[in-house]
Image (cartoon, rainbow, N blue to C red; front, side, top):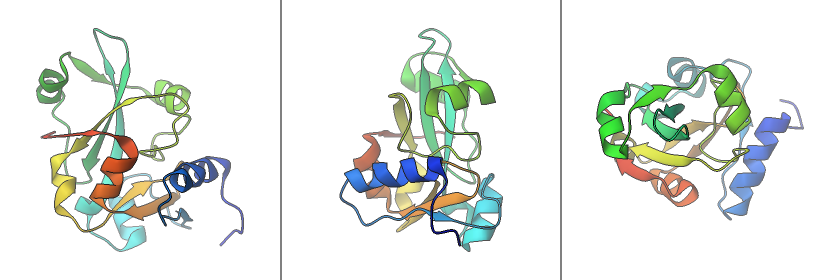
Length: 159
């Protein structure tokens, strides 16, 4: 394993350190770009993967981050009703530009710009979950409570 983290993974680690929690970014040889790949590389269930997906508000033209369980698909219409505007999935360029992370590596923390965050209620049922850490090969383990504390996200149903 390399002694130094990729710059994006290091940014995530620095963000985690600011919360005073003992959470560590690990870089894996296998891809963690999809929830299935991440679960296989880590050795956990796909449901324990916290997918960070960026959507764009059609009225506000502002991004929002939905952190969902790896087995769930976000119902854009239902979530749009909850957040007060129709949503569309952000393209790879918008994701990279706004968060500073590539698709498949978007972390719940350490973004380039502030972003509204919503958390899938299904993630709250696990003792531990895993999230991307800035690259499609970096992850970190945390609890759902850590996720709430660090992001200030609002827990909602996303299905």
